[in-house]
Length: 425
Image (tube, rainbow, N blue to C red; front, side, top):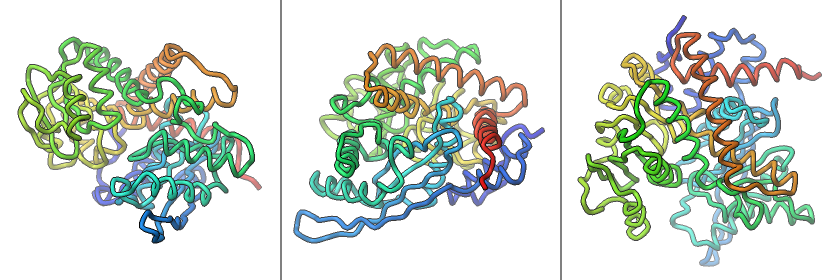
């Protein structure tokens, strides 16, 4: 029996879609997927590529390119975010859609995986230009989205405001309000309480479980967080409140560290005032590379993909790596961390809090009701702890790493649903 997902596919380092497919291939060998179901799950169900002509503030028109990929709908409508970024590629969106399928299955919510993206630089665009582009993009993908078909959500550089524009555009096409077409909306438009911190809170819950499983004390445990956007910032706040000591954080401009612990509230205020954590008083400057190798108990990569590699995996000092970002650890690095006894809480588990509360939001929209925030948090806690325990049990039973354990849970659930539904005609 292999002790982890096969890490021989070096080419995966250059392509996240290759990496995602390789991960499925390795799991298929462990769980014994039939060739038919394996082949079916290896490719997306639907790929839509659209042109997005957009009216710009200077009177010109620019044509952007966008994607919506639906990987699987065997367990329910597809679900996944939309990212706005200049480096978006179709292969990236396909990989993220596949990971969403496994993520939804790991936490056992009735969704399949989808993802969307637009190749653009939102930081260089005005609010009016973003609205124009978003509304045209929504119109172009409206043939495949809907509360019973595919439900977008925020992702990199997309916001509740952008979700509001998507919801309004889709609703106008149908002649009545359809809040369930997106999640991550403003509260006043049917968004769920607790959604803004859901990814970070879910990550906290599984880190707590991992610390207990390893017999490690939480109070004073040292945490380093790469990325200080939504997930990273809220993770720092919530983990600090829980009793962890945040010793290092970073954003795209650089990082800061203090072995005695950072005052997270002051760091957040500094970030809001200056746009970066860099320059925060009473802390040493560190690079993003140095932060990953910082002396800590828990490392939280909460930025972009492919930051833990074969080159730096041997220098990671944390006992636990909690992947708040999607795909931060390359396959060959995974093997090194596993051999060194470092527990990696994979992205399809560690950052599943966001999609879980998105599911709660969707349910509230369909039922035309709203839940109190403590009810949302209690439901999220139950979902995340159960998902951790099921993953940990599979990892121990098969003597594999936590990523393989999570994939076994997720892929088995999707494969079972596919087998029960059958192929038609």
